[in-house]
Length: 511
View 1 (cartoon, helix red, strand yellow):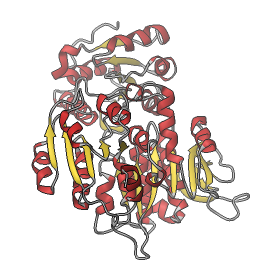
View 2 (tube, rainbow, N blue to C red):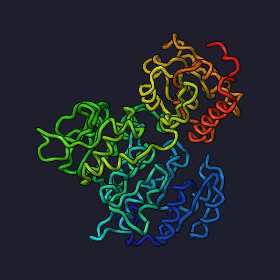
View 3 (cartoon, rainbow, N blue to C red):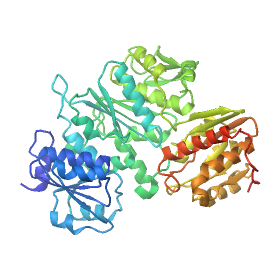
View 4 (cartoon, one colour):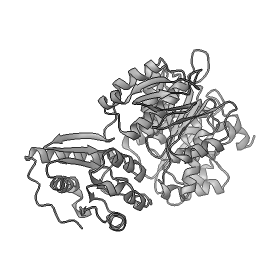
């Protein structure tokens, strides 16, 4: 039997995976979950990684796989000699990576972890013998919050639901959990979706429902072009059975739904902050309502919650309300009642570093939205806090920040620019928002970036206003992660408060 014919038979945990030669690229959390799963299935597994966490490196041979640590800038001889029947790559490996190019040119099957998870999704089944339904969530921004929200709403509605995928829990870990689930709520990055685009039909997920929350340029270096990034995101709707949820305020998502190959009978369900039409969710006179999942949707709607209740819970920022509507649509597609949604939202709180107020002191509100790692996310933050002192900059990932500055940036009281790519940010302000004062924190101050940011920002505000960390960029140029960036910002604010608030030093002149 050819490798292609054998792979076509591997659509169940109980299929014959024994001896299948699989090369796994990368040994992060995802890579280890792949290796561990395949070893349990009896496959012959070779893991290749440029580096590895000590714990993962110790466990790979324990689970029954082999590990090769070394450079992957060229195709390693160990991979060639192994002659894999399939290669499963961690999401960090881009289409242009030399090993990925070699795999494709060699005609070897190339999977991501999501395809493997779909193929073995029946390891643990529901009482009726069927595997868990999948709900797929992607978008440039809001994925993690919407994934958490959706799972929370489903659990409140009585279903066993697990958030997994790009949110931090590998889907394979959820699939193999002996407790079992009714629904897996799967957050998908554009990288994971790109790999799904290579899948044979038997490896393609058939989700119960799916959403692309929004689309804006991001990860262009990884994908190569904005079109390639868009095409990857659009795959989230492929094969959807029940509900294709889309953002009525983002035409790109509507077009994705219109073009998607879905199961006959799947419905398009829109959401936005306006008055909803039939088959939509939206907002009417301060009420979040559902006009999609009820019989008389032409003449009535179901109340889900109120903006006042969301304000009390810290969930009333416009982009968070959009996430809530999207999550509610997904939950309603699986039968969650409005009362359960209302109850769940009363207890739900956002994760750290998502428009998180870290302090209010001496008339200044300090807001950490370090998770705003691209212009689209930062624009949402700026709309939520107009007139704020905007802390911006970092690793721009190949994205032009000029449009953001020209639109949302003009509302800022001032800008404090950080990161190694400051020149482009400063030039964008000079050209598109010349009236906004701009202050620069030199990259040489890496160890004290946020202390200097806080000193400058406090001097600008001088007694009343908001300081907003919404960098519109990745963090790895100066920090270990967006969380590290947010933590350092909050620590610097606390240090400023402890020093007596007014010890700001001299604010440098604007550029």
